[in-house]
Image (cartoon, rainbow, N blue to C red; front, side):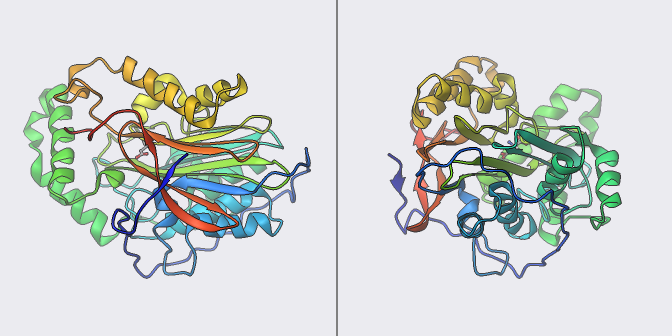
Length: 371
Ligand code: ASP
């Protein structure tokens, strides 16, 4: 059972006055009810699902839960929830104001899955649109495809009426990018490995120096919900790894990695080091383990153990010989049982009829990634 986070442990992210960008995603309407059952409705998310509000009255999980329990399609409710985080400039790991890539360009990834309708959509390397989750949803609703990328994803969205902006940086995200540039030596370009290590090292040093919190160096939101009819959906959206090589796509928009949903079983999604998750397609693995009877927590822990086992490169290990990165999974089964699990101690958000709260995840390993 996940533990509630005490007031002291809960570091509230400040909200800045937000800008709402209303782009209506065309919808095919209400999802058909596949099953009726007495499931206790629940929405879970990474912890930023209950920290930022974009200047409004509700966080992501509160928004999604309210819409879902009033009858809105589960996925539409979840997308409306993560829009709060995407649009909030205070969250520098998602949407508008997300930390940019190595060239200073904000590139966004997202995917979504609709359990009852067995549909999915995603976008990667999307520039200029604050709400990539809405574009992922539009890919699901409007096309036969599951993933559109780069300029063509942007063109697709523009064709549907999404506003395309020249630059999604905020003053803060651009300022942090300039600081990162200042810390690396571009002369190392001739040795890509050395330069890559230097770039990662400079980024991690900025985390250690308190300029970026770890959750926003690798920042993302995953949000999953089950309504009273047992309909399961999920969405993941991110600006990806800060200062990534342009064109890098992490786990977030990849079905089976950043998110997987099976309406009969449940949903799993992730935040943290995308490469570690991509290697094992852990969200798919977690759902498959639940299908075989594991609880959300046990299934998530098994995926983390596999990631640990696959992490053998020295550059990815800390002084204790353990993974030197964070990775979190948010897991809910079709009965509404749920867990937040992580490589090291972390937090996640839960919303039920009793309200929203930040809970502690179950960590696989003691201490912190950098210890
Ligand atoms: N998983 C995301 C990625 O690798 C980043 C994150 O969750 O922090 O792109």
